[in-house]
Length: 330
Ligand code: GDP
Image 1: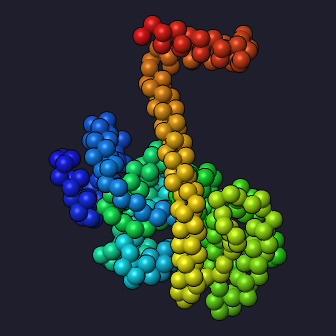
Image 2: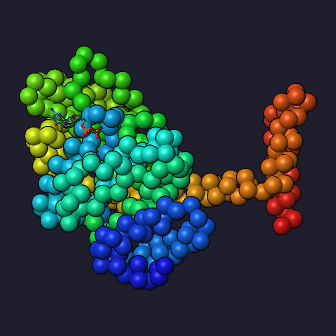
């Protein structure tokens, strides 16, 4: 594969080249990895920056419906929109629910949009790296907005929030009057909560839910990266395409404010640092796990621990001491 050619096609906003490049960064093969790194290095200086929007919500709240109508609204304004899906459950099932081809059909046909389903069969750490690389490729390809979609399970929100400029939580109208068991940690990450399905019979429930969340957000500690009034809760109807322009206005207001105040760049720098640390840590672990001598020694010490001959702490200290001796000798 000619990396120079691929790079220049991506810079020319060629969607097929972009799709190919994402396949390359998703590959587990070592030679592919080297090519991917060369490509990402080549593109790093493009200077192009998209607004990265993380979007989370449990299955059924209307994420695909929202992304399709929201995405179509943005492309209608002349913006180029990329959608990346992060679905950790696909790592287990081997197939991606977010990758279903029938989702977002209209948006998928839009020449100003690009939709990429979740890579399957990878650990969350692998998904994180691949998604970050894919975001970087979409930015180099000149997309204005990159939507990173995730299902509301486990650690995937934290991961997506760590690579997004804005984090949006999509909720459905609640039947009862309690706060739907949304974890506090996830609420604290949200910049904007959108209560979807505010239409027809569900409209009044949606408005009540929205008021409840607005109240709950009000009680959270004020974050320095927020102007007055944020984080906020709003209602939308993805199906009726209502409230979408208002939601986009709020996102733009927030992003612009953060840019002006320096939070935007500072946050990206922090995120880059975080991912660097994380990748080095993962890389070191992977290297250790590939080393047969280390593996054998770990098994050996592990069985001592299992038989109660050594304490866990003692065996760990021993293992780490041996590893640093090994490193000093290399
Ligand atoms: P996802 O699993 O989060 O991607 O949710 P989907 O977009 O597939 O939507 C789940 C269901 O909710 C579908 O039956 C949609 O038609 C419905 N839905 C999505 N958005 C709305 C909306 O704004 N109003 C109403 N009434 N239903 C909606």
